[in-house]
Image (cartoon, rainbow, N blue to C red; front, side, top):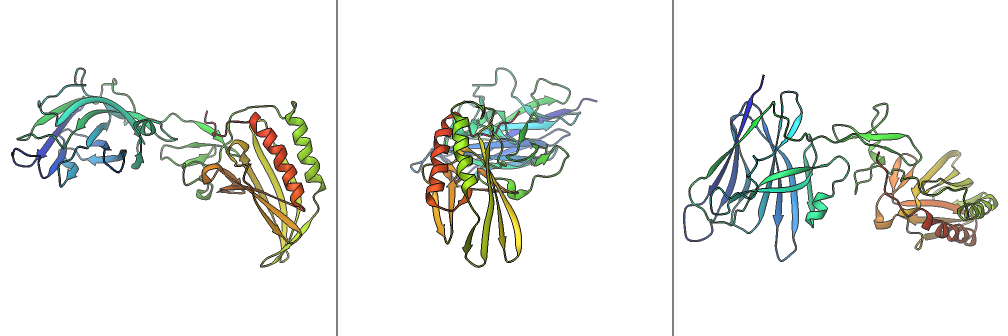
Length: 370
């Protein structure tokens, strides 16, 4: 059975005076039989810099109203609004203003205008983000999609009275686009396939959650393998790999003494056709042994500026991720460095020199989603 959704937009302004209003509010009312969800993008222009501040979703119950924007003083900011609702099949749809609304100015004063802007939103999940440019706010990361924002509200414009505009949506109409994220799958560095579920969580193919420690804080993504790039069996990369493995084969167990005497051994190295470099190293301390696995896309590592530490019989080489982002995987955690142990600084320098020659053949470090 079709049901009708009526969205009433009410702009409440201060009393009529020949100056800008002291207080400006934007109220939205849902006069239908289903809740309305509103996302906003506040475009701020100031001496301290411009920004696009996105927020959603603001839920408005049926036959209820809610203040979406409230400013104590009038300003020159612009608020863009996107509307969504769930249809009779429980599909979330981006409600678009009627044809001909874009560019309209129904109140003649610029307070509320029809527009056709697009910004990133996260369907079905609350979200907040700040972008410095419109392009950044339109470059959607994993779990986000572009939605159409069909109204703009300019609180700095003077107006009088309480202008009202209704927007009609029918649940059975399918011309409004669905706000869904197509399922995309990636492969963890040194791991299995993963994807984002409807709740915005990273999960394995069997439905198990990817550990939170494996999610990079800056990107909200785990370290993923990039696209296929260059065969490791082709020249000259094959020769550089042989050089590295020859050095690794010459590394002998070494001992460092910090809190506990630790013996490092069993170093191994590998690289695949995707440009992911991997090391494995064993360590024994206080009678307990453990193994550390490291993997990272070579394109994401700052090979020119390694951090080298001399620790008794061992040398520790830490190669930091560009931008200090957690691009590397250490066992079941995302970390900001890729590391290996050797006996001498010369051995580490040889390994890094070969890696620098390999790097141009694997320029893409972005995790591939299919």
